[in-house]
Length: 146
Image (cartoon, rainbow, N blue to C red):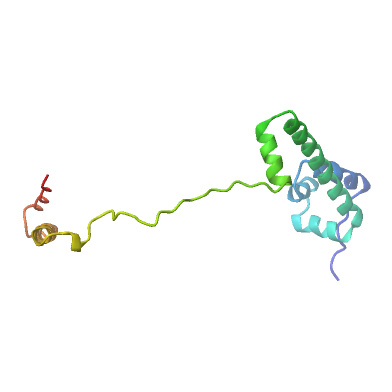
């Protein structure tokens, strides 16, 4: 037979409501010196602890929400935007315009003359030879005609 489940004293039960306003369930478990899963099990099996935890969270959320509404009503733009995004379903959208025609960034081989292709091939051959140690240095890339 396993050991009996841990329980909280009446004083600790009352503290749950106060602590829930500022701490997470894991932090409350740490406060009481019990494991997180043990505290969650207590919430599951003891309706009073669960109710006090929910009530403490709700009170804190209500107080912060009240402050947010007051700031929003007084004209604080950031508070107004936050409130409308979270409570009224507002969202920011970005429109992206697309163009049907795009100029190529680099010319294709079809755009180059035979001389330009030959010059590029010679350059690449020289660069490869330099990498393999077969040439003293890579050749200079031919300058474009201006």
